[in-house]
Image (cartoon, rainbow over all chains, first blue to last red; front, side, top):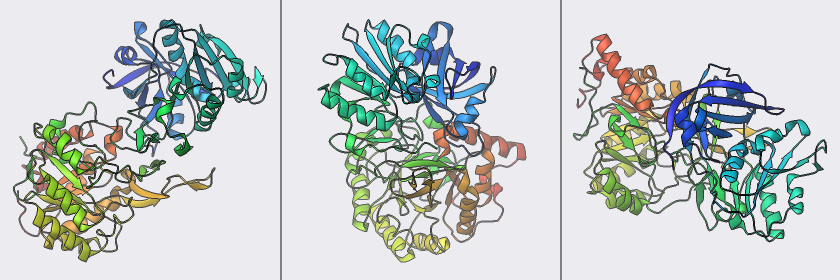
Length: 267
Length: 307
């Protein structure tokens, strides 16, 4: 694992990549060089009353220009504070932390499944998969067309889209798109709300896609992000718990006790 | 240069009055980017006789200026601590204080017995106040039981013995006196306050266990007042805990009569807080022309402290 840094980084750009989301681009060459697809950073927030850092996946990193991007929704005071950062402001970050996706080189197809803001981690994942020579099918689901990440951000992948309201692509769930994909010999990389991941596991079972071929990026409430508070646990298959921050956030699905997964509160 | 050294009793001297609190620093291995040598001591995660998986998620929740936790004493058990961790601590410059938890006096004594004489273990902190296990609080809320447990632990160890008090009582001074009388070398005060948060959208408690322990700046004035009460009544040193985030916070606890402080929740957001507060205390003493931390007290101790 790359060594984490605790540092301030300057905001070089703030934009709205899709409806309801904010993208912050930070300049920090060390962080950009260290970050792997699926890893996260703990970002400090200055909102009154907010005392914990906020964990965000690396959306993308470009070491050659020293930049790293984060895409997030505004769900509470902490993310609202971060979203109010402007070019030139400093953001205090700790990371990269945790395990990214395991991406092996080869020509076995990769199927990416992103539900809602789960897509935030995927520009980096697609880049890493392309670099590993993997053909990528990208299944992207959102509530409505305006909440889809622009195609240009997932370049190189064969994109298929589903929306809950039918305003783009298939009218339905991102998991409905799986029916159109041959899954006999693929690796799946998924990120989205816990209920979506749980349904993915059911669908995978029906399609006889082994859980060992599915990696999921988990989202749980997090305290420290480094393994000391033991707050971010995920039930482990066979008993006990995995630490989302250390064993994850990207974890092979067969390591998880899916019956014990809870849909956590994100305030 | 100002002397920041403290004496916690039984000759247990720390180079800094800034410790990291149990449950916020693991067993000292996981915190990145922390200069352990700058710490007064590390207090470990609560350690029990047998390994414990801890509570089901959701275990933590942020609240206004605070954090609720109900971890449930997840820990690898004393055997693992003795064989896998202590041999590494032995080579550290920073003393490691093992926080001991249990459900019966026999449990606590068995943990201490296993670690007594183990190189690397500098002292014990008795967790008589964990709000997140079925029977964890009973020792801490009953002066007679708190005294009995402390006496049993005292008989089991020659190492310095710290007892961590719960604030979830009517009369914290009665409990504090009982553990002092039973042979504690010092007390740490306070543990978390029992609290709760409800997810209004889902209409259910945020934490799986419904209630948990509240920590962070939200509890600091409450903790400070509890420490003030305890330092006004005890002869043994008191280590202040509760929402300490800044140098000024630490100064308040020292002025209230604590000889040292433990940092808890702040470690999560600012991994280098202990170093910053240690530096800040030294700078404060020098700026004020004070020789030592004891000079900060608003009132004199009941008897001269060990320092």
